Length: 287
Image (cartoon, rainbow, N blue to C red; front, side):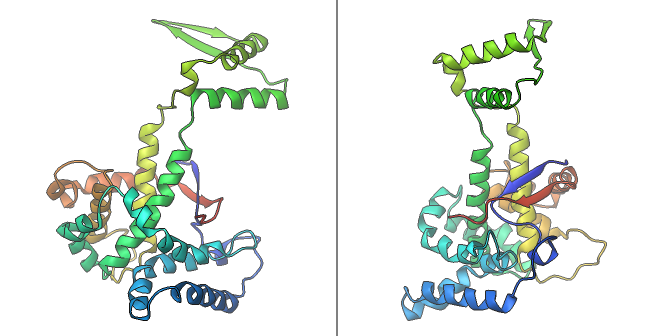
């Protein structure tokens, strides 16, 4: 797939991006420590280490992408996440207890050299971002027609064509003025159909969400594993990814089958289908 997805985070570390002035990493480190001090001082002394441990994997991720639009919002994102943690966990399709008691994902986490709690927090953090993106991809019929009419206002010379299928017959119109009049009539009437959601790309959108979630996790979790350069993913990574999809209700079935090497084909096909997919940055880590 060659689509470009614009999410609320970077995919390429800033030091590798072109056209960006060199960043003073010492200054950014000092700035993050300032954010941390302001944040942690709001909590009792005996709970501060536990809180910072919870968001450590989120911080590791956000440190890779600290700069956006002359602001440092990503560096603040882990702390803003924790402020709203309770409400965000309510949006998760699974509970913290379900995560902790799901032996298959806990075994995979252990094999990857990760800690369960910060892994859980990182999943919750990403899930909100990806869910927000997904909701923005759903448009109504009325919104799509409005977009077409706006483009016509900008360039009245645009030629339109319309294909209508009636039973087994296809009727094609190429009269732009006629088609435009139909669209304007459609929008000038309070039609129920204007509120219908675009459903055709639903499956594509769901698979994109699956890829975004597991690829971002596998690329950015601080795993402690040794694997040959030619090996893209070890079994523990596949198991972890499949378990995450299962918990997020993005994978259905018996977990002893769909979350294990019995279902490697699902993970491998997902990675193959999206091998050319580019995750790029647009809006920053907004909360």
